[in-house]
Image (tube, rainbow, N blue to C red; front, side):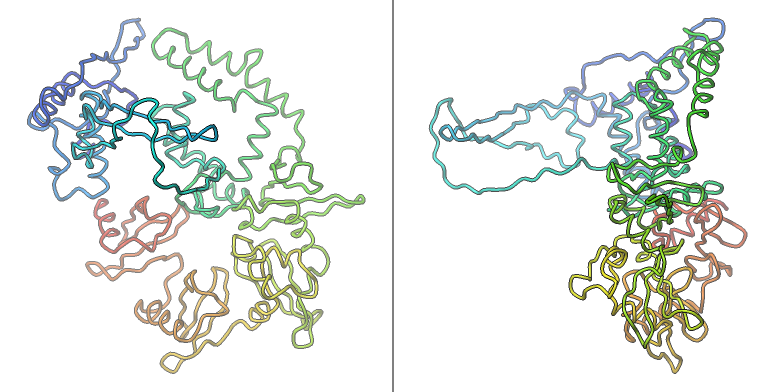
Length: 582
């Protein structure tokens, strides 16, 4: 919007309009709604600082507002057809907020009637009448009748109960922060400023301290060298939407800093520091002295870190102190290769890596579940039963759960789907109530939710599902997940299908859509392969630094709204992203 000349410069903290912006905005309000819609003028003064010589200087940029075109602001409808839906919505926000800031307040007359039912309880009813809509005129839902009337009542009047309907209300724990509510909390605490909120969130993601997800699922945006940090945190790579969920690394870092460098996780400290930096920017304080005190002073960062390095052991620097593990005999640590559980009993120390899917839902990190993970690493694992004369074991390895059929030279192993081996929500004994556990009882089997009958089906992989055009359709499990193979070509099995239950009819359709219509197997790293554009392939790829769009030798960033589901982007939207790079 800024580059196309529709809004003023957007990297600004200033909340004050320029004289030109205020004058044009007032003229527009008056022409659209009349002079009575204007608010009382409160002349704001632009923030001023001091230059090196002590002279006052004005801040460089005013508040974000629409640019002036021929003496007025363009309405959102006047932007033209080359502006996308989201850009138009964003411009509408800037446009409406600018005009609203110059309009009169919305005045509402509210009435509350309190009705006593004997001495047992009271009920309340509320009504309101809009006296002056003020800036509410800008709302798309404004119809001039924004009222909820109560009948005429007199204090002390006896009213008749016509009907009653009992309802229940259950309290819920506070919701997790979303990006919007997190920024609102930063504003409340006085930490950061509008121009830094985005970089704060970006840093938290890059360092794998948070991820976004829905009901415990989702992934952070991590690039380049920070991929190892994400893996160490026990989470996968990418970007998701939804609530912000802390990683295990975040718990470790916050606990470590709280114990040894408390100031640096105190919002009041950050607030005071920013106030001091503002004083330096205004020329009211000296910057060099502040930096020396901050780093090398008596209570400076350098001395605190030196003390911390002497006090912190390897284990204490990696220990994740979760509320669910308070007073537990099993500990959880985050190491360079990922999270792992530790149990010390009878002088023996046992360790077991924690599958990533389990860590993505911290509600599953309990003492009981960690013990099941440790037991799964001990000895021969859990015996599920006997199949074809050989025992079937459920075991847990570094990369998740797997099956072992038989022992010695006749032994074979079969990996399990990551969402099962990782315990990412499909386990928890969901099916065991109906089908029961194997010979070995609950534990790891109950945690994962694997029945013995399903275990036998996994041991039958690769499985012949049926035929398509005379060629067999084979389903199996590879390093990148479940897949279908037909005529030496492959296609991934969509998440909504069960690897061991997908039928011939569905398999034929998936082969038709995923292999035949797309001309065979996708190249490595290719997520979406569109038809050719001007003789060259247009593809969505997963590269070292994240998901991107490729055409010829031109690479374009994947629009942020499709990072969570790259396959949902259309050919037109992908080509539009390439077009911006040409």
